[in-house]
Length: 474
Image 1 (cartoon, rainbow, N blue to C red):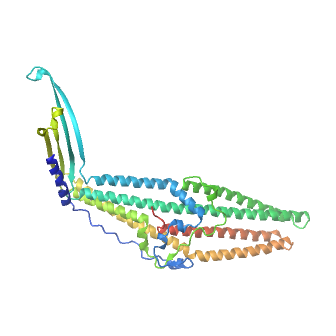
Image 2: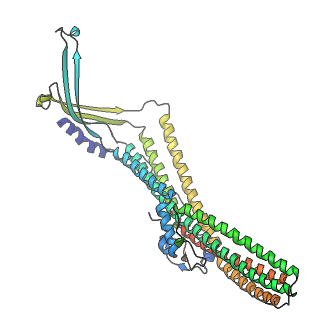
Image 3: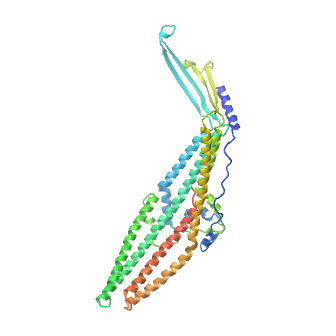
């Protein structure tokens, strides 16, 4: 046992002596995008400005999404969505893999005991009679423990750690994408419910006009053409109502698929939304460096660091590797004499492996690890470029939304007045129904466009929250 203790006492010393690393020093690649976005100033108009460049990224989704029904639906999705569940399980798998790799830094010690019984026939021994012998052994030891003199195991451990951290960031990215998708799906359902309500309102108005026109026709005031035109308008409105009913049902199915569970009626949106999303403030000095905190960018950087660490392991493979195997225990042919001092046994077997000829496989492995690192650099840069484009697209849309909303609201007001006047003139017999029908169609179209434009504005807020990495906490 004393020999084993001496061998074990050498391990920390030899391990500390091997703390060198052959992995290249990590340098974060330069950002492949410009420092600022082109449409930032235009997007700031009417949207609020803050001096904190992380304002959107730091705000939590519970604060950003203000409608209590929407918040409840997002909470359900975070609990039940299968994609998010898979991402969480991937984290646990990566954590376990890191634990396995980390365990290689320490020797694996085991205790063993055995009994061996054998019979020797008399024809092969001098006594000419069969003999039975017993052998008892008990011991403790470790096998093939590699001294990490050139940092190979440590590099593999670093690679496993960075892979684990990349998985964590991937889960955070999945989380924020899920929040954004649920919010957009819920708002789409709200939009189509509002469009359905508008179509039903228009149908009710047309039915009222049909009833009046039928009466006027019976009195000889309205023509058959007026009556058929009103009937055509009524049926057209019925088609719209039925179409929106179908679309609402599909929207609800899509939302429940995202949530991963049935959604109660109490959590569905109403036809009139009262500021369901906070207006995300555009930072006064919005810099593209904010993208470096996005979960997908961080995940790509951790993958790059893992590839960088793998180069160290590939380089260390060119150098000798030293393995230690040691054991100490007792051995006896009598069980009651097994632990006697005279029956002590021990073994210590150091071995060294020095690569001499491998047909270029080690060089190929090193070259492969460097190529993988270069690929990881390109993927990291591509991730930043994609993130930059996503923010640029959001700002480009947002830059003109305020003006569009004002113009569309004014158009609805103008068409509403026009419809009121033309409808009044028709009821008083001054104009044909065709003029009133044209005004009604123009108003209906303008109201639909306003609802869809409001949906675009809400979606823009959700997307800005997503592309700047907001609410991505685990």
